[in-house]
Amino acid sequence: MSLLSDFYLAENDDEARRYKDSQKPFGDREQFTSLTDLKISTLWAGMQGVEWDIETHQLLTVFEKPAGPWIWRFPAPLAKELAETTPEKVLQVAAQWSATDEMACSPGDVVPIIEALVGLAKKASATKRNLYFWLSL
Image 1: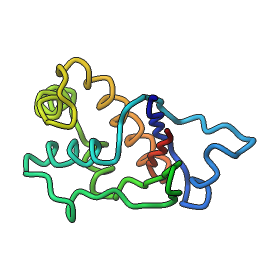
Image 2: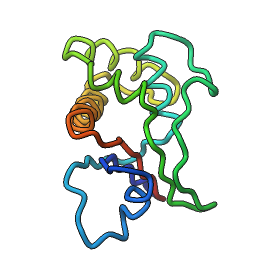
Image 3: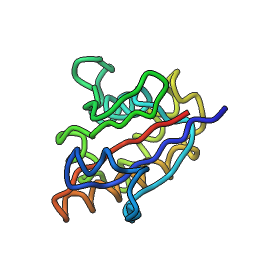
């Protein structure tokens, strides 16, 4: 069983909740597999160069069912940090994130994920929208 991990932009939480039910497709999105809110929060800690902390690095819950799907909004500080991430920092963060117990992969495996999140965060900032994470089993 694979986890479906979608990242997308929406104007607000109400619009974000309609992600999979909307007749109108969400154009600004990226799709991956096997990412979780914990993995994204460890990315955030790595971007800051600090130890992961559940209180500090928590995504904001927008929707959840016991067996999924789940939707989280990226907190404004994380979205801002992503939007300001340079290509050089992407490589640095990829090395750190890939070495975590949660990821345990090569840096090259996570560079496309980080680049996609940076791109979405830049679009979110430019269009005054929020960045969301939808997860389903």
